[in-house]
Length: 409
Image (cartoon, rainbow, N blue to C red; front, side):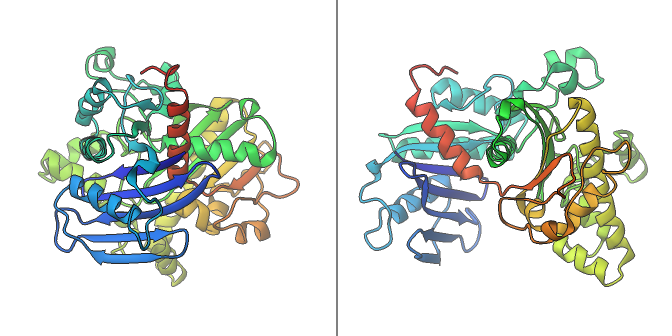
């Protein structure tokens, strides 16, 4: 089965085509700057063809049409006709409590995606536009929606509820939803496969560390807690997001700094995190670490604060699950920063500690590949597991299509 994976955003559409007969990636790319000046197409296929050019794109529908043109191009395409694509898997950020697994797209599913656009206004609406465009261009193909929130629907109520009036949950749907679920699901399964033990018998903590960051407690293959909450703003310190703060800070900013709600939201989402803490004009951790190494004390504080928050969540999730078998680092920072991995694990093997001990040499050499980085004496296995959300979406899509008669929304 050949499957196209679509990740449609407000100004870009990312795509990857897979041949699931041998689990290979045939082509991938992105149409970006949609609706802006100089929209661009980037396309690469498995034979080494690489294309980058400006394209006339005004909306998601145009972008999907260009993607089809690339995939079927006589010179560098990977399918002869678009009907070779039997299914399209769509990344959708929010399915709330109504959709708890990947599903065939129906009118009812599209209605739920639109409904939860109220809680994910930057993601669900463009996700839906991508689905509708592919329905038009690929009417023969099964459209499948794969939700970032679905993996976290197993979190128990005592973990997803906030200390607010219960009516705000029942009437306004305010609760912890969690995000990055596709990544957390993929890397937890890969970690279990790597050590050769059943996922159902393992307690795993997965650290997805990139510009956006989240940590998930995975007990027996099920998400039982996660650091992002009602929105992706909660939890760890991130590239530009503040993470956990005292909610009264919002009222202080509005009263004493005379900021309105939009200004506060922008401050916490776009100008905080590592960008705000380091104050070097960049939220890229590599730039911040370079500044730290040059003696910038504020950059040093930012790095230490970032790693400290990761360590706090690791400790709390070990307590929540009553133990830990595997600690996983993934995504851009998790896969590529030995320093952050080391700082996050430092001191966790002391007496009465958590049994986590890195091997410095393995950690230094553990970038960008699936590998173990723990010391031989470490009770907990520590792994670097490169995430592959596109492949996870393709696998979910194939599973849903093959079992469509038994799967219901």
